[in-house]
Image 1 (cartoon, rainbow, N blue to C red):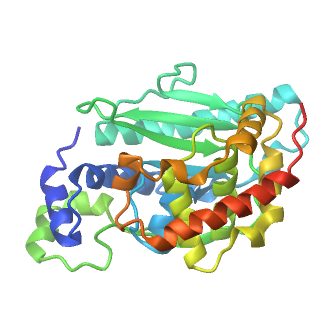
Image 2: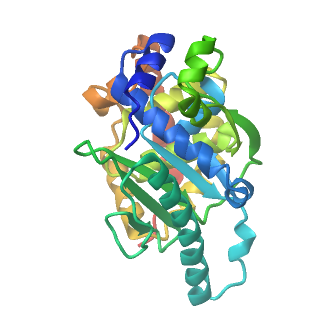
Length: 309
């Protein structure tokens, strides 16, 4: 594993954020992100999305991220295939991404194996339409990093070419620092990515809240940032329902949706210590009020979604 300790100290001093463990994770995530988009094939075929995309491409470091999420862009590739041929094509695509991640993990010093049958490292979901790659920090118990890829997705909005930033973006460094940390700065520098439209992220965030067994504060806080930038859940009801319906082919998501319809409570996880630790801003009264409104908005959407057995 590469020794990031001095580089983390530099970032902490320059960013004035005293969370070295989360800074290290961000450095690793960004190194993975940059090296994935250094692959011409990946750069042409995959869209960066999720909360990490909001942080790096849109709103800055209002919170730290813990994983990376992508969607395969060329959905027409799966059209017209038989069920067997489609699964074979999906597995082949998953192997391409896995091989890329294995090379990157080796460079960083993370534990990972691209053998698709090994569930310690690779897990398929939603009938092979989604793949989660699990990379492990060799020196930290529970230090797992997930790279999740949706191979099949209903993409509603046109993605954008944007720059993914770091904690050092816009910060001046001395020539000595630039020379001393040259290799680290090369990995931890801005990179052009193909990114989800924020409206797409909003729709998928609400879908995640509705179809997860356990809701996470970070998802609601992402929605809060989107709200502060003019994107309201109620304005994208149709897109949210479209996203949710596309997940209803799978019993796990149907069951979670039924459960959330009966038990939905957005505010219960606000006190989760780790979720709060991820934030770089304090949970204020405005967020609490936003949660109350969000419960109402999502409740109305739930009422319109039909769940079939």
